[in-house]
Image (cartoon, rainbow, N blue to C red):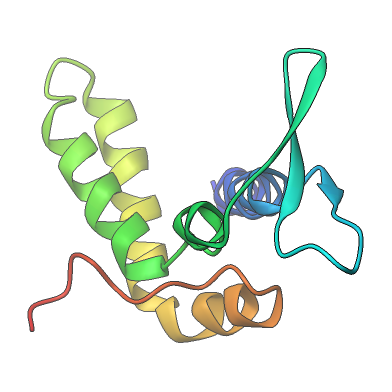
Length: 114
C-alpha cells in the first residue's frame, strides 16, 4: 500500500510540473510566453500567465481528495485509498509545499480558513 501511495504521489507531482510549465518562452523583448493552440502559437498576456502559473498547494489537494472520497461510498476500497492519500497530503503538507515552492508552482491555500 505504501508503494501505491508513493507512486500516486509521484504521478501527481510530475503531472503538476508538466501541466504548469510553459510550452515555449517568448523572445526577451516581449512580456509573455508562447503557448500552443492547435497548430498556431499565441502569445499570452501577463495576466493570463499569472492565472495559469503555480496552481498547486498540498492543503488544497488534500481538501479536494477528501471531497472526492465523500462521493465514493459505492466503492469502499477506493474511498479508503483516496482518504489515505488525502491524509498523506495533509500530514506532509509542509514538505510537499516546500517542493512545490522549489519548482515555482506553489499557490496560496484556497481551501484554508482565513
